[in-house]
Length: 256
Image (cartoon, rainbow, N blue to C red; front, side, top):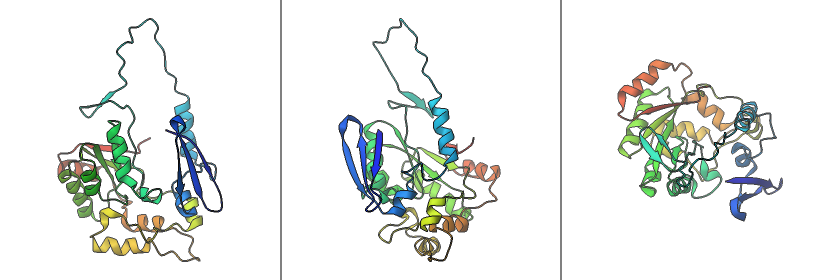
């Protein structure tokens, strides 16, 4: 549980205070720090603030004089029972924060018997995350690309690797204005890669642009990559096509 984050503006050492008095220090570049959105007050973050407000408005309604000696906070999702009622949403490029990246996150999810949704834009391949965490429930988050064959290939790789569901992000056909990334001209550090695309020549060429934004450009590598690869013409027919192409359940993410 993340209780507090403090940071220094010069070296961007991030002290994360965890529950039970534990703490960990992360060494992040300013670009990575801003891209990982650890500073919600830097920009308006309208959606984030509305989501927090909606969550804070929820209240648990207690019922008195009930037998509570056998408590269970688990839940059933897609026919499987999990002890932990909270899952891990997809977060891209986790090795920006720690060398173990997505493998460590999946390990933690497995320890808690929680679902982890792996971002397609991960810095560890979906196969490696599975190999390092054979018992964790993994879902793969993905986008529908202009290259539909690539979308299908990702689904097939997830099937072969034992993933339990495909999560399609519905609200990023066009990337929103990520002002911090634009201001910082965020690019992928040279020691990292989008691992799920590592052996795909055309996409490696596009990813190389992810690393090369000139000082004069008002852009970011992420913005340019999305503009080149994501299809802004997607509709429900594309979702139906993926449903027909896989035995895995399809979960639609990002619908208000």
